[in-house]
Image (cartoon, rainbow, N blue to C red; front, side, top):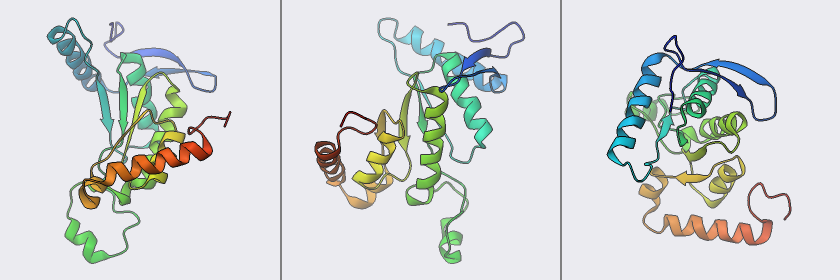
Length: 192
């Protein structure tokens, strides 16, 4: 895999999902170099079987930065993007005491549900089916899972709902999805 052009910056012409071309200079060299180094190390450590390398991104990135990550992931041949990590934003939280108690760290679950879905949709619009998109953030119900699959997710990842809802939570989500598929078909399937 060739990660860089002669100037040391990853660059390529990318055809956006939906048409049109866009010249993209991949994020600052440090990110590209690090990802290329990790990819090379994984390939060296496992020469017979490719170890997948997805990158997990924050919902706090600006839309332009999300686009840059999408194009960089395609350009570098990464295997996917996990959308999203925890958020440092406190938007939408109305209880000031709860906000203060939460402290400065990242929040997961319901507070990032809407933004995580926006990021997923944006990534899918930029990458189409060229990358595995793993939806994470605010997935609490079968309907949440369905919405992410319909938005382009290939896989789902969840922690917070599992912790707060207990060990039967995956079964409830899977059962709800199975019911919905029986009645509505697969998410995004226009033949149902």
